[in-house]
Image 1 (cartoon, rainbow, N blue to C red):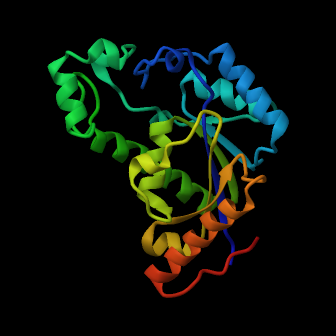
Image 2: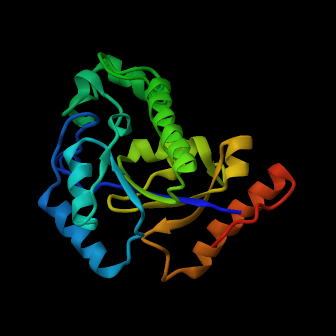
Length: 234
């Protein structure tokens, strides 16, 4: 059976990351440290290539994709932007620690909306709808592979909604320049809208036992849930 692969990669370190700021929709550029990190990772590892490349519109994602895939012509997807932190954009947790609204937001598990911003449910709905549209496009067009350069929150939203093995939102947190590879089997997607998380990016070439565990747990989870293993092309 034909399968489709999507590689989710988090952008490199931005200026806002270095300052510990909330920079959801703020267009914080890649830091020099971020550029150097991506160049180092690209020199040490083979990043997965694809037929199509997609990115958040924010420059830290667009520039990260250009560094890792200089010949790519990416498609910008507006709804892959990070969560909107409203009036807290550009401010650090230290600066906000005495803000009662911020304290309530933290205590809620980031579920409630920041003042003037986006609540967790609306953010996840926005990202997931964009991801589903992308998958539908791939299935209709026959495009079998894609790279998505996005934000940590965007990636965690996609994987917590669709990834196998199932895991909570924050369990999918990944470092800048890193990510995960998904395999989508049409029958399984149409039936239950889930995707097998089969590898990390960069691939765990120095820890084959961990890579093996990730893949096996995904397949075992699918088998337990659906009663059979999906047969896919390599």
